[in-house]
Image 1 (cartoon, rainbow, N blue to C red):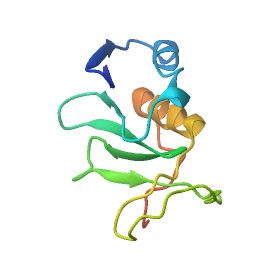
Image 2: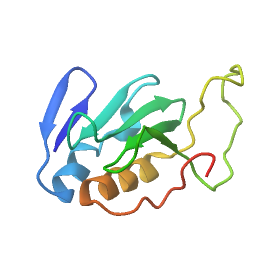
Image 3: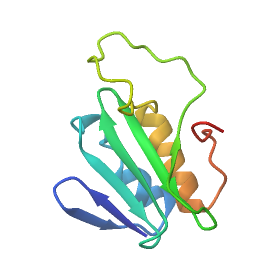
Length: 117
């Protein structure tokens, strides 16, 4: 699989350990930066930095369209910039992003629920 990082960096990933190493700097990414792990053009997982959290969408084999992952945890909304209700907000922490990227890489079921499900 290919991991696309900010700055047009592309890293070839062959194991979960390599993926974890490549994503070890998640906390340093600025708001608006995107990382994406691609199995193919149609099957990928993408995370966009939003404040201290991430907006994560994925399209796996058998899924018709890209779906947003969410969390069952309560979020600390203090310090977040106001935003219109129609704009998505990040819900996943750095650790949960690493977890769902590993799950996608390994072909496992996501531990985080799908939004609206």
